[in-house]
Length: 316
Length: 317
Image 1 (spheres, each protein chain N blue to C red):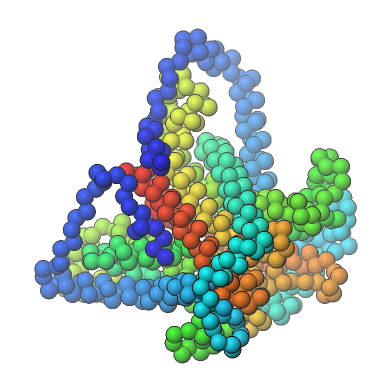
Image 2 (image 1 turned 120 degrees about the vertical axis):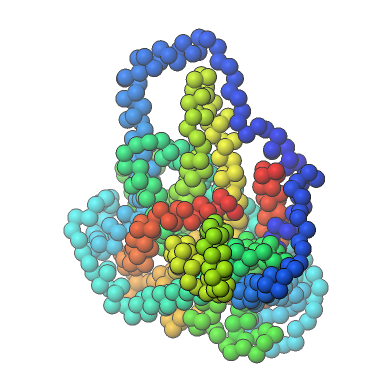
């Protein structure tokens, strides 16, 4: 069944073209200038469409967030802001619930990243640099966590968080701690995987020289490998931060007020001052505030992120 | 849990021979091995506590009548929850919606993503800017993009209706995209396609850039046109990147929750299996019944992973 797929040769040899076709191609190249210009115009047109398609929704969120309500609900709509109005941002930034949610998200994401980098770097060092029995199985067990759906463990985690399981743990419902612990289910495997590849790719000589000089494996790790792994740590840390910052299902399920509610949940429940008001201006201001830091980070680190993502995906 | 990576047998008998592991002979070797286990221990502990145990517990719960916040005695009910699940028309329609969502969103993302990757792969001024702009939808949190699109789909003041009715004159009248049960799911699929296509394009672009240019030059000399080049050179060569991207996207799409929940909460016409499961587990507090749904989702994903890993193995062999 599946084997069929491979039998096709990786590079199929193109069929030999007939002579006329080649001649035709040649003529086409000769009188190309008009066709060439047309092709270039078409190419740039496609490119513009692609860029508008990818950027327009966020552009629209920004425009809506700085348009006063009196114009926001005009039809037909205006596609660029006529005057800039900050009242939606003022409303959002004076909203204590939103600010608290921003703080919660920051604490949870930073703690998740720190914890998964610390734990993950140890494991990745062992998996990437040591040969031992069970190494492959260990790697696969950790990696397999990325594959399974978080909704599959939602109920059990809910019970554990409330202290209803094998061990007498405190009730962590509606705490940031609960979110940090559960977020490790998706940040840790990813961190281990990318860092393992990173450690594997380092030259062995440095480590050997240090070992010969009498440094223990722990010192080798802290003083030689970890500094070298810094770029990898930055990339994985950033990707883990984005994943934690964007998480919704656990945050929605394991919190019930603003002592732990994250910004994603806050946005999804953002309403106007009254039940009947369309609060889209405020919602868009909140959306922009939550997204802008991410976009800035992503654009600064875009090369590293692309490398990290493709390493995770293509080698995976 | 082992996600099929271990389970999947090697397809061909003539694969690389496994080197038998031999125990380290020296004291240093043994110490290194102990040290390695020490390093890996915290990660394994986390995995055991927050992933393996909850998963096993989900299997167990699915065989009981446990409810959240209820003190009544938990009874073992065998496969009753599974029987109830498959006779629940809401569950069956959730499965159908999930399949529709997965097939259409992954399908569109792949085709569009491939098209965009091919366009960006050519050399032009400003390519870096275009590539950076592709990262924007990916960086936007799903909840935020769902909220943005909810506003764009708004029936009276939304920009989608404005564009289609007043500017492009494609539609004669405004459509209530979200409220109309017939358009809600396609509209949500469009949101997912928008958010994920650029990511797909970037993954495929990375694959395209591994193809050496002289392959194309050679085939141009041989008279192959662009279309033939795409089917006979590009596609086979990006196949590994394409397969991996497809795996990740299919698994993601199948467990879709955020975009659906933010845009339509528990509306039956767009309910997917993950949304159904959360409602059963948390809102209806039926841990037993909800866990049965969770187990089914897990098993379906497991089957997908096994199939895909076999496929990738075959590709590699």
